[in-house]
Image (cartoon, rainbow, N blue to C red):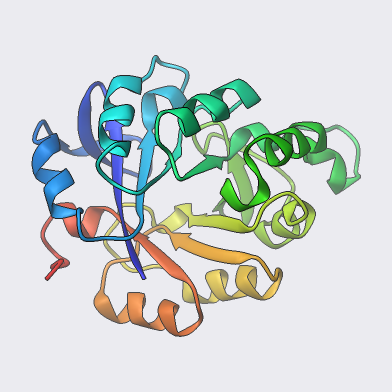
Length: 232
């Protein structure tokens, strides 16, 4: 299944290359809502909240009232997760808050188990999507700036007791319009029995179909906003 994405920054719909360089900015929020109205799932990320640079809560509430959104960005507390559900989110995406830097060699210590458990208990495992972002083979957090000595495969194995779905982003390909890494996605999918949704460079209908054949949904952003991938 194709899941279109809406990223918010500074009150606008944006697309960034590698999470940094602004490539597309649009004020036509209603236009994008109309384009995505036929989709059963839409991914909505508040980039400002994710980077602790404010928030776009009013827009999140407006969009979630019209589209079936899974919402992420700045979910570092149970209260934030509850606020997003109250705003209309069908599910909450939590990423960096689930991880922590640990000086010990025990990989399990790199998961904030107390927070993960609290989120699962509050919103329900069925409404919690754990985001695992990978760069150069390692989990990256804090806007993809902090690298952990933890692989995506290890991360999903450690977190699968708290959620029913993972959002795996292959950051190396994000926003580059060069296709994604099917082998990396396949490895993550094989490591867990949980549902996998993939993101990061997915560009063509062929990739979406190949992922669908594996039971994996595909989040697409740049290819849609540039017109490279038709929604017809």
